[in-house]
Length: 97
Image (cartoon, rainbow, N blue to C red; front, side, top):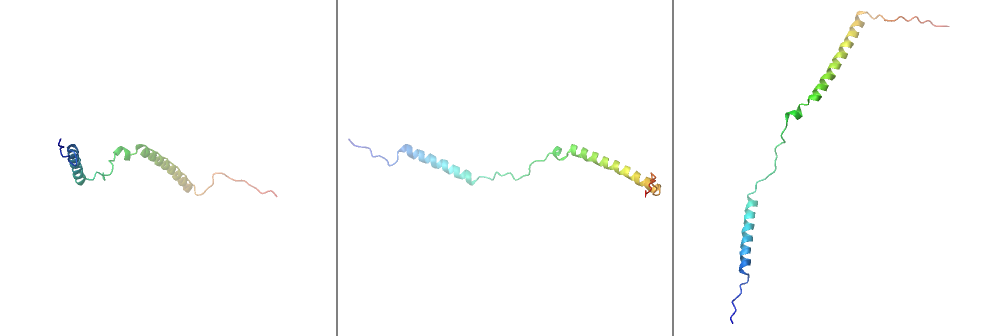
């Protein structure tokens, strides 16, 4: 009985090796041709986040209070200027000895 000479690597193993090498080469090509995927654009801005209506309303109210107080102060100063420095109350204080 004669034996058939055996190949060093079985046929199925050679086919698997070729498939692995082809897959590896395809992978290397994809890695070589890969483009960067980092997004360097700023995030999208929305108008309703920049326009703060509540803050604007609070600021407007604060300014109206300041304006009202300034008008009252101006009236007091004007009345003091027109009265020529007279006092509103008289002080009848006498020293006891």
